[in-house]
Image (tube, rainbow, N blue to C red; front, side):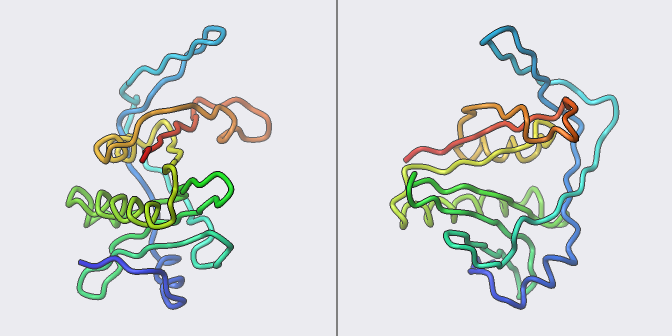
Length: 173
């Protein structure tokens, strides 16, 4: 298994790879004035959500994509953006193929992000995870990230409120 930087030929492989997650648990948000409460709840039925990569390999300033592969086969990737002004690395997307989950691949990618952040003298790493992506939330917590905030508007569609919110996690150096 090795981690490397994105190469132009990787774009097509990533675009053919269905990005999805499955969850049976979510975190329900309740507000009371300035107070927010998150409660872990079971979903009525298991969900499967698909999503698209942000900007794989577009080489925008400060953006980086790491590829994780085994025997020259892509088994996952992680998109990141470094904010030089705030000295923060943001993980935009992390994905591991279905067959490679629960084998430490996501944890390996997060470890690589920590090395990249240290190399760039970042103060920390942040990522936002939908409140129903329970596997990603558990991965972040196991990798030493702390829950630090809520984004209520990131998943609103056409001005309508949604039960889906973004949960912010940070790793501090």
